[in-house]
Length: 595
Image 1 (cartoon, helix red, strand yellow):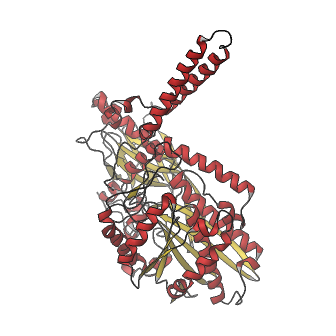
Image 2 (cartoon, one colour):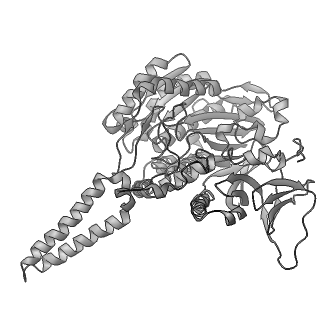
Image 3 (cartoon, helix red, strand yellow):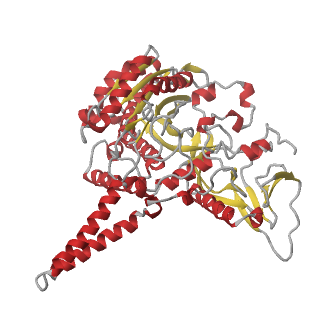
């Protein structure tokens, strides 16, 4: 197969033809290049010079697409993921950025016709997970620049690296479609290989006197331990943590560019919190003896990528979180150094549920680190005047709500410092002195927090009203209550299947004919009967008949015993469900990490 010229740009607009035996992707953005033919029998790919002639009996369906996301091979077929709708959301360092509004999966599964009924059933289960993957939230891409790299890392790229195709420049841990791009990479289809990140991209422009400032906030989600809130907690044995997100705040003003990076991530211990129908499942620390090694690997990786690290731990010192807090702090004592510091700040104890202004106490404790390690600053010529030498790593339990409020506070103070450095702000001037800038900045971080929270927990962030308005509101508290209930429902009854979809697309679970393909068929005993909706229905019906029988007691005392039987049956079923709560939850069936 001919190799696409790596110096050429990615195709930005294509036409997908559905022929009976193949899909043909034809570039229509005005650039020259060969079309890509994908076999519907086995998913094989080749470049062709012209579109095949159409049969007069069957006119092919034609789609307009805006990028190829990747190809996933399952048990008996391959599945092509393409972008069918996109939305322009702003620019990153002068380059247009798009959000994926809609994806479509095109099956190359004609070989299923010759497979067994069991294989067809299993393939259907797997392909059903791709329908969930189609609706993945928060996917962004650019045809012109590498979204996986921060402004500082982009600035540090050498000329040789800049000349490489975007996918070869990409940071693998932030490349959402890394696994499903492998087939295109093997076929050397550089002009079709579109890097995609998952996270958030928000932007605003505001006036400060006669100056115009552009502010961008971008989140990059790590794929190494990606997943849903309750099914991916803590760290794995390699030190990669759940819900690890790099957040970069960029300003452009009068030709200057400033960038400041923060990270968040789950507590880097081997721990989990398996759903069992209780509102807050217990925290369980696993393999205590491995904690120092895992944490050391985690912070070694952070130091290599970001420099010095200040780890800010926001969890409670007592209660269910206390054991995690104690183990995190004691283990950090063994690896702390001049480059790695640990600071515990009991967010709920100090700030409560409304006094988030007390985060100023935390800022006083970390301001020396921020001043010393700084941020990236480029002048009008793109020359580096200052660079960021370290990063603040923030965590709570979920790394969502408390974390986002704290990161927005740090981002606000950093923006004020940058504006003072550029001579826009006076010594005592703050963002709050400019209502238009203040409102837009709050919304920026609130939207940022909501996006990250939706991807991990399924709902917008809690405490978002403080980030959005600067204070707690009655409506915000009620919204938090509703979102907390929704998290409970999703965590217990939906996220297991969503986790399977994530693991399939990210390559954490690789389909093979030698593996057990249909986990659902492995159920036995109580698990094969466990259905929470059914159990709840029986319990409610039992109590209904118990109450009806009680009403008849005055006419016939025997109804009292009938009522006891119905009530006893309901209570018995409820007790069985409570005792075996894990079996009644929606659990992942594919990939079960060792840690």
